[in-house]
Length: 271
Image (cartoon, rainbow, N blue to C red):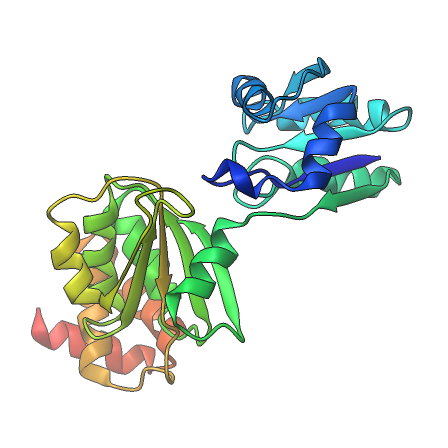
């Protein structure tokens, strides 16, 4: 079978007994970065020397068939660098192909940056969604946030420290300056930090520079947006990023439930 195994996201002490047992006995390990896996095994005092197969975003499609055939004969342990494979890490393509091929897939649960950040945030946890990384480019990022304007669930994102300030500024612009946001960095590590505030407050805080691995947790929308002036603001923001007025009006109408015609005419009057 194929075994997805969660690895520590920062603190080595979070390695489960099941993970240690699997690393000690596995003959085949597919790893996002084999060097990270070797380091983990050494740190845990494991002397096993399994066959290590690289499995990353650039080769997963071509490696899936090979790993599936191996899994018909022996257990294949699948690891990402940190956390659970297939969650914003390699693994999804392999699991999908294994399911189609009738190969059993199981998991050794463990640390998860998504769930840990959500639990620490203090925002509602009864319903949430994970959105991975926000787009790198500002225009694309604002479009993605616009599509989430009416999302009622708490949202969890990963983000690079180099883009954090820009992303939080866009959150304030698109989702509202008063939207509650939590930035969680360096989870389970010595300098773990949970920073809570409004989108505008955290955007200002992040301008000074923030280091480490980062999760952003954002409060869901309280209710669908019905304010036409705010919708027009979003249309003009998209137009400033290069969208045509008609397309921007349609996009904001879809995200907010406002009238496309009224958005178009309102934006036209303010240009």
